[in-house]
Every structure is written in structure tokens, then in C-alpha cells.
Amino acid sequence: MPRIIESISTINSVFRTVLGFAIIGGVSAISWLGYSAYDNSINQAKRAADDLASARSSLDATRKDLRHARTQIDELGVQIKEQAVEIDRLATSLRLIKVDHRVARLNVLDQIVDEDTGVITSKIQFLEIDDRGQVIGEPQEFELQGQIVYIDGWIVKFDDKYIEEADIERGSSLVLFRRLFGEYQQPNEGFLLDEAGETPMAYVQAGKSSELEKKIWRDFWSIANDSQKARRLGIRAAHGDAPSIKMRKGMSYKIELRASDGLSITPEGPIVSAPST
Image 1 (cartoon, one colour):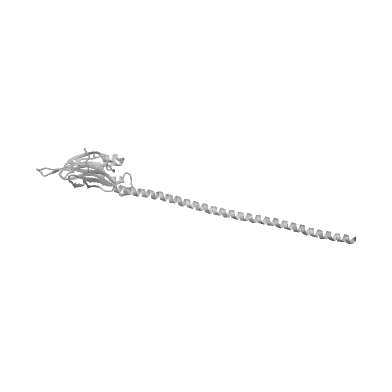
Image 2 (cartoon, rainbow, N blue to C red):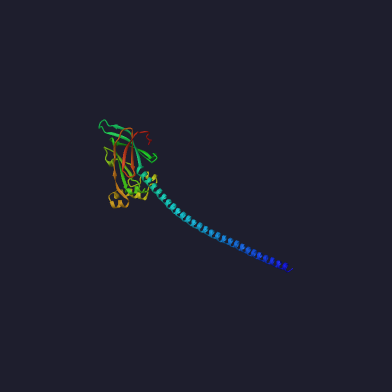
């Protein structure tokens, strides 16, 4: 009996020992699992924080790049606009230099020789045309003494900078067709064309009449004789001009004024069709 009791006691002792180790092992395992889970959570949180910081840094860098790109785009846009304005200005200046702003045509309808004096009378037709080649106003017919015709005009030339800048009012030379006369006529015996002191009809029709032009034609000779007054108006020269050409019957001649030049007369060939007066 005592041995049986002793054996049971021994078994109980072993059982308690085993149970104690089991409990300790379980607690240790649970603690380790808990620590591992906590450690993983900490690491994950740290990685998430690092990833977030990296994302924020990348976002800040991207925003900085975008701001820089926008600045470059804005600067490029300004440059493009400035270049467009410059291109347009240069194109306008080039057009003003090349385009004829006041144009007329002279048709030699007939030439008759006086048998007694040998003097030739030239019957001519004078007509103004616009940039599209359309006739302005009524054609005018005159009989001049001689074969050589003179075209007397008042010329106003502005400073070159106004042509380069494509200035609206001063970007082209101006002319007032004063009169026509032949080689055997005095200038004051010539046939009047534009009215002295008045803005020529061609400029009024083209919408180019301005207070500046009115002042120029009204005070033409005063301006021509006063360099300071001329400079204040941007004028580099104001004077008369009377180019001439020896006419041939049946020929048509072009009278033109370029933006930065004076009057010129050039043959265009045989008369195609002369408008009736």
C-alpha cells in the first residue's frame, strides 16, 4: 500500500512537472508569437512610413519639375508671341517697301504732227488705279505739246525707321500728283491733277487720310523749308519731283510711288483697253 501511494505521488509529481513545462512552453510560444507579430507590425509600419516619405519626396520632385516645365512653357509662349509679332512686323515692313502705294497709268492714245511747225501733239489719257488694278475716279484726257511728258508731284519721304517699324501713318512715302505738261509747255501751263493743299482722293478712298496727311498737304512748302518742323513730323525729305519719259503712240506707261522711294515711270507695253471718258 505504501508503495502504491508512493508511486501515485511520484506520478503526480512528474505530471505536475510536465504540466509546468507545458505551460511555460505555451506561454513562451505565445509570447514569441506575440513579439513576432508586434515586431512585424513595427517593421511594416516603418516600411510604410519609409514608402510614404519616399512617395512624398517623389511627389515634391515631380511638382518641382512641373513648375519648372510650366515656367519654361510660359517663357516659350512669350518668345513665340514675340517672334510672331516680329515676323509680322518684318513682313509688313517688307510689303510696305515692295508694294506700290500710289499708282497711275498713262495711255498715249494718239500723236499728231503739225505739218507747219513739226510740233507733235500727244493725246493722252491719265487714270489712277488701286492696289487691285481697279480704276479710281474718272479717266482724264489731255493734249500735251511734244512727245516728252512731265509728271509734277509733291513727294514726302519719312525716316527709314518708320518703314522698318511698319508705322501705319509714316510707313510709306506720299505723293500728290500736281500736274501734267509737255516739253513745249511751261509747268504752270500744265493740266492740274490733285488739288493743292487737299488730301488726294486715292488716300481718302483707301481710308488712309489722317490729320497728319492733312497737315502735310496743307503746309507742304512750309514743311519743305523748315527742317525742324519736318523732323517733328518724322519727315526726312519733302520736295517736288517731275520725272519724264518720251512717249510713243499706243503705249501704256505706269506711274508709281514705292514706300521708300520717289516717283517712277515705266512702260507697260501696248494699250490693252483704254477706259472711255
